[in-house]
Image (tube, rainbow, N blue to C red; front, side, top):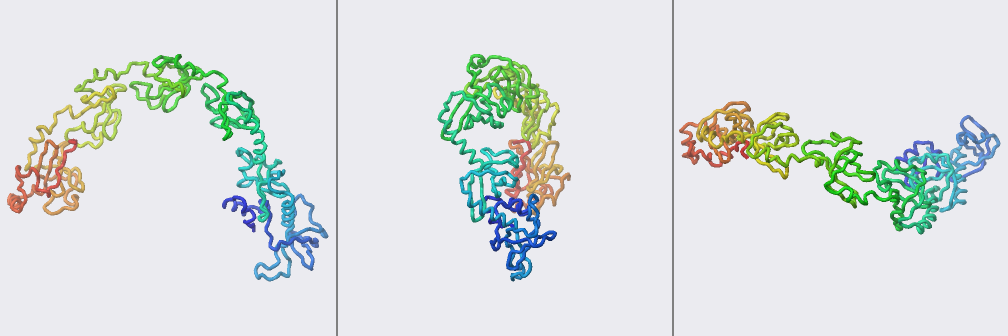
Amino acid sequence: MVNRNLISGLEIGEEQWNDILNENIDDYDWSGQEVISNQILEGVIVRIESDNVIVDVGGKTEGLVPTSDWEPNEDPPEIGQKIKVLVEELEDPITGEETKGMIALSKRKAAKIEAWDNMMKSVKESDVVTGMVTRKIKGGLLVDIGVHVFLPASQVDVRRPSDIGEFIGKPIQCVVLKIDETRRNIVVSRRALIENERAEKKTSLLNQLKEGQIRKGTIKNIADFGAFIDLGGIDGLLHITDMSWGRINHPSEMVKIDDEIEVVILAIDREKEKISLGLKQKSPSPWAEVESKYPIGSRATGTVVNVMSYGAFVKLEEGVEGLVHISEMSWTKRISHPSEILSVGDRIEVVVLNINKDKQEISLGIKQTHENPWEKVDEKYPVGADITGTVRNLTNYGAFIEIEEGIDGLLHVSDMSWVRKITHPNEVVSKGQQVHCRVLTVDKKNRRIALGLKQLSEDPWERRIPENYQPGQLVVGKVTKITNFGVFISLEDDLEGLLHISELANHKVENPEEVVKVGEEIEVKILRVDSEERKIGLSRKRAEWTEEEAEEATASGGTSATPENLKGGIGGDSGPLFKVPGSE
C-alpha cells in the first residue's frame, strides 16, 4: 500500500491522491517507498519459478522476489546471481508471529531506496539538475534525474503552457526548489531557472529603455486583448487598441507569433516592470484634425463597418469611425435591431451630432437627414380631435395606438370605460384592432399623445345611472365574481355593484360561496348610489325583509330600508360600499 506521508510535502488534492492509489504504484512512485524493517540485504538467486525468484539472504533464510521487479529492458534473473533486496515481511500478517516459511522481498524497492539515498547525498536545494520528462500526472510532470522528481504545472514555464504534456520525452533543466529527506521527495522548477536568466537581462534592459523610443521585438504570445512582445529580456504589451488607427477585430489580423516588429515605447512602470507598447503611434493620428474636418451639424458620407444590437459603426475615413445609435436611425420607424435597415458595406449619409476628441468618439445620426414629423404633430392632431388608429402594443397600464407610422398615442386603461374597472387593456381592445379615440393631450417635447375611448360618449354617472338606480330600489342582477369580502353583481352591461358579505343574509356568513354561486341571478336592494365616488352598494338580506322586520330593525337600533335612511347602510354592519370599476 502507498504511504501517503511520502508525498505529503506537495499540495496534492484528494482526487489526485485517489488517482495515484488506483494506478500502478511504480508509475507514480517518484518519492521512494516506506519499508517495514528498513533493511536491505544482499542475497543469491537459488531458484526461479514462473512468477517468483527464490533468493537466499543468509541464515538459511529464503525469500520471494516477484519476477515483475525486473524491468523489461533488464537482463533476466539467473541462478547464482547476487542481488540486493529489501526485507518486507518478517512476521505472519495475521498471527504476528515470526514466519518459518518464505519472507517477502523486493528488488525494485531496494534499488529505489538506494537511488534516493545516493540522490540525497549528491543534490541540494538550488542545484540545477537535468532530467527527462517521463509522464504527465495531475498537477504537473514527472522528471527522471536518476529518481523521479515532481515538476508542478505552475513551475513548467513563465506562462503556463496550454498543454504541459508537450514536454514529455524532452530533456529539461530545472532548479531544485525543495528536498524533504524525511519524506524522500524532491520538487523542481523550470520556471525559476528561466526567471533567473531573464531577471539578469531584464535589469539591464530596463535601464536602457525610455518612453518614445522605437525598439525591435519578437511576438511571443497573442491574446484577444493584444500581443506580448519580447524586447530582449523583458516582455511588453502591445494592446489591440494601440495596433492600428483603424478597426481590427483580433490582434492576429496585424501580427503573428515569432514576427519581428518595431514598436514605440509608450509607458514604463519600472516598479511593476510593465511596459506598454504601440504600433499605430509610428504614424500621425487621423483624429488630430477631426473637429475641423467633421464639424458638429455637418453632413458626411461613410461606410457601415459593424452592426451591433445598440447601433452601427460608420467609417468616415481610415482610422475615424462614428457610432449611429439605434435611437438616431429613424424619427418614426420602430427599429428592433439596426440590421433591419443597415448592413455592413452600406454607404450612407449621416449628420455629425457630437465629437469627443479625447476619447476618439463621434456620435452620428441618420434620422437627422430627414424632417422630424413630431415638430407638427400638434397641428395634425389637436386636443379634442377624433382619430382612428391601430392597436400596436398592449401593456398592463394601457394600449399604444399607432396614429401614423412612428406616431403612437397611449390609451390608458382608466380612459377606456366610464363604468368598468379595466384590469388589463385586452379586456377592451386587441392587438391589430382599429379603434376610434379622442386626443386628450399632446406633449410635443416628450413625444407623447394621450388618447381616450370613454370620452367619445357621455359619462353615464352624470345623469343616467343616478336616474335609473335609486336607494331602496329592488333590482335583479347576476353574480359575476365572489371574493372573501363580498359578491360582485352585474346590474347591466359594464355596470356592477358590490353586495358586501355582511349584506348577504340575516345570519353571519363566513364564506359567500355557501350562499350564492357565480352566474346565479338574485334580487338585491340598492343601499347607496354615489355618483361622485362612482359606487353602488347592494343588500340581499334587506331585499327579503318585510316591513315589520325593517321596523323591528329600526326599533332595535338599526335603520329602516327607506331611501332616506339607506344612504349609508346600517352603521358599520353594512360594510364598505363598492366603488364602480373604472371610477378611480
